[in-house]
Image (spheres, helix red, strand yellow):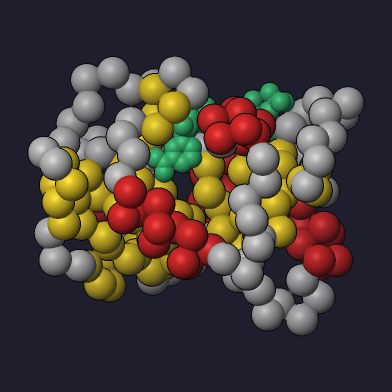
Length: 168
Ligand SMILES: NC(=O)c1ccc[n+]([C@@H]2O[C@H](COP(=O)([O-])OP(=O)(O)OC[C@H]3O[C@@H](n4cnc5c(N)ncnc54)[C@H](OP(=O)(O)O)[C@@H]3O)[C@@H](O)[C@H]2O)c1
């Protein structure tokens, strides 16, 4: 599995159900990387999506403990144990990549199964945050293997960094 997230300087990712900032080019890149593949998200991340609609051209998997929740366009699992058989079913030949797209709760539980992370690192420490993912710079099991030039949108500076797991 792959992680794909935009983080601030403290690896915070959201506040009050929303992203910390919307970077247009980052959203395009997110689409380019994940299109045609499988995205996994928690219920709170789904609720932050525009219109709470599934992401187009992707298999959307929703994780929720609520067994009555069945939004259109999503395959729903109520436990993470159910996730793996579902992935086998929808991706029997493993041709599609699997992306953990949010939020913090889901990323923290699935990090153990990830071997690559596409991180957009925003050069700012946001004051109001309530959600985070683990800091891969402080994790000896992970190494940054590529980074882009610094990018800019208005007063936001950021760069894309790819990480790979070097040991399990
Ligand atoms: N910066 C980024 O790249 C990025 C990306 C995505 C999201 N975000 C932000 O992250 C925040 C949301 O993250 P979050 O951590 O609060 O919530 P989340 O991970 O999106 O969703 C949490 C929900 O997932 C379900 N869940 C979690 N673990 C489960 C398990 N083991 N089994 C069954 N269901 C499980 C539960 O849903 P139920 O309560 O329905 O049972 C839980 O309340 C928002 O602010 C969002 O904007 C940021």
